[in-house]
Length: 270
Image 1 (cartoon, helix red, strand yellow):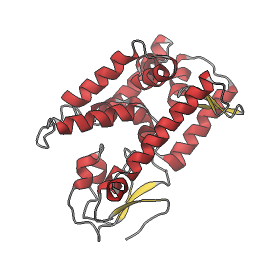
Image 2: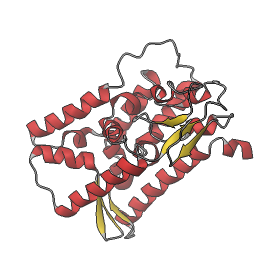
Image 3: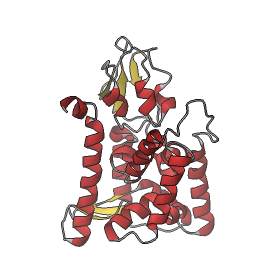
């Protein structure tokens, strides 16, 4: 039991964090708690200041709409936090769609639908094309385009205010991830993940690889939703893994029985 918990510690911590944030939002909107009020697009923290999704703000800017200063400051706070500390951790530690995607990946494994030799039909860069397209459509239509169709926003608002048709969007992503592509939504399509990958370059919070301990068992690659990040380093070099698309989910660390992977806040040299 202890070993099982140890090998899933970051997964458990992520679930606790995701559910806790959701409960705080529900408490703020239904029970008058003053910790978080609003949703993932824009929220008020401790009734003191706003926290805003910088990607939502970017889309809104593209429409030509002028946002209030407190919303802009809130977006800057979030932008700076993820750019220099959290990296792309929003995707694995905050986003509720991560739970859907992880569940789909687990079901896909149970059903034995995943095969390493199957060529993926689209590039992981596809999410960046969607990111650019969402900004262009926002500018052309005058509406924050991705916010209208985002399963992330639909699921989060639905869990707080009632799901309605949001279930349809969530089911489509789940179906896509199970029967079409493993981690298809988060790893290939979601422009929000693409946005946080863009700003992840200077984050101080990274996964550290120790190639002296690594036996190249590839267990980390099996569970990693962004395999292209880990692949260049396994059993080759000791370094902080700098792939911008790493979401700091910690699954590679959990499953590594060689203790060759860990989180690091400092530069790591051979």
